[in-house]
Amino acid sequence: MLDILLIAFALIVAVGYFWYVSLIGKRNKAREALSSIDVQLKQRLDVIPNILTIAKKYMEHEASLLTEITEMRSQAVRPYDASQGAAVKEHFATMEQLSSKMGQLMINVENYPNLKADQTMMTAMQSYNEVEAQISAARRFYNSAVTALNNAVQIFPGNIIANIA
Image (tube, rainbow, N blue to C red; front, side, top):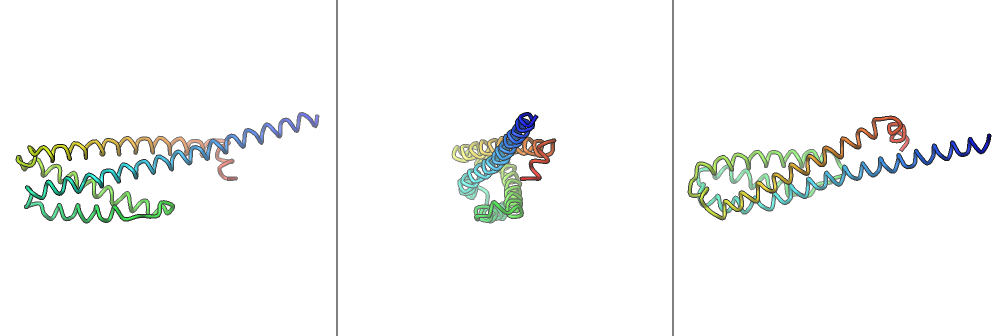
């Protein structure tokens, strides 16, 4: 009888341990996915100066938009503490505002046939669009990782193990 109880206890401890390890792995995967988004956003920040330099030659009327984008890029490049949720939210909010302004710039490019025909600008815009697609993919991966983590933490016995941990 004692042997059966010891085996049952050992089995419960082993299952709990492996479930705990699984939760930690899912949490780390979500953090990695968030970091992947940040890497893609930094790549976008690297492409923006090239686009702005080319656009300045043609778009004198949109100087204020170009200035706003430059200022937002400067804000976005500043380091932030990734362990603080508020800092991360603020960083991503700045990135979203920058994305919106870049969208306005891309719409305005349509009004300048010479700029639209400039091969360097076309290459820069293509690079920007590729980075935007990579950001979108990274966000989908992050959302998937967070959903898997949330499911594991909210479903029995993960919720008990997560509360203990």
